[in-house]
Image 1 (cartoon, one colour):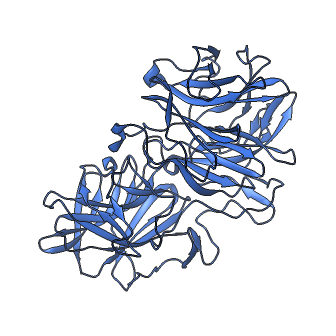
Image 2: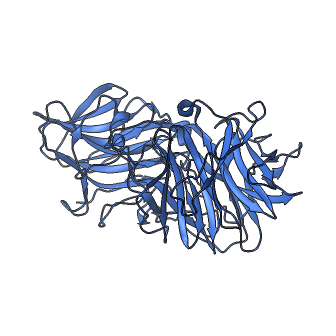
Image 3: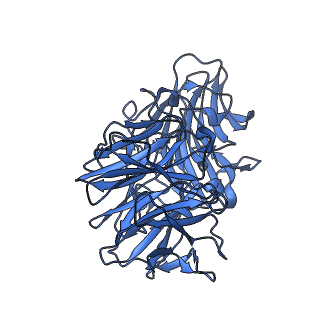
Length: 520
């Protein structure tokens, strides 16, 4: 029996509700949009235009699959269509590696192919390519091994020569605040020399990183964030020569707006000649959300946002939409009925998955999660099945059916640097409802056979209220609220899990009927 949703309309397509509402919608419906255009954790976004299509990728850190691929035609509405890599390269990522994994990538289109260069800061710089970004991407190739080599971006010049610009992570490389340009084999297979440090001015632009390399009207431009993730600004560098010297200018900063640290993103144009800049804002528990700024060229410099009193651009909160055809799609808050051959694309594991963690075939119409060893801290558990927070406020509900496997615990979790879950644990005497917070476990009472509805309502600032109910009747709240916290370089996430406790055998599973977002 399919469980009944009590707090929201039924959905008609993944993520969309029958009344047409979303947890967050950037389109105001009057020719304007509001920022952020993606109220979800797509950190370090990079975007390109190929014809009439825009393609975005972003950091994914320890989560798998990685390197999300998003598509748009109007720069306001985005659809999650793929992930470029099924897992993070390297055996160590079978366990949770907080803050490690895939950092800021760059996506480009060259020679009839799509290219993504991405770093893992402990291993080096990788490359993956595809003819169709929504299709299969190549096995990641290690372009350059080395600790602390981060944020790579390729560039193919008019004469056919290729280059790579990147930054340094001080935590691994021992140096930072500087950008290096290296010659590269045109096929992206390797770097051809040491290249040069082309910019280093830590007094004026500390923590310079995330470079993107462009060329326009004979000028080489490097766009790079400086000043730190939550407090920084966007720098533009330009030179007549790829190795410099580069002059610099701050082109976007917070100014008098509430948009902190506006930087690190992509400069794109439209077929009609408009220019736009997409960047992230560190929104704490919600992760790094994506904003869209109008851009223009003045005296050979790209300026973003609205003009500020000092000539530096400031972020806009509301603005007329780009002059582009309508495109209706939303990736945030992907509901899943588990009725298809595979789950929704928005799901990610908390580490590289192993075969046999899940099934949609063992019980058609249900997601079966197989019990894996329980970790002391929930956030250290690799087999968490999670999605990004999709808005400032929202609710999630699922229906859980527990089989007769003693020693299995399964439930609905919110995960970050601190984590909590409302779960069902089956012992020799039957099923008990439990609330797990940090490293404590509190029993709430007996759960009758036949399943249970679990819900979490996320309020402003990530304050979470968990609740539960049987097959009928209202949701009853768990007494204490839980304050969600961001993870390491990622926002908090919400999702499902199934673990074995100390008394469990080597087998066991739990079944989930649906996973539904509502506006909360």
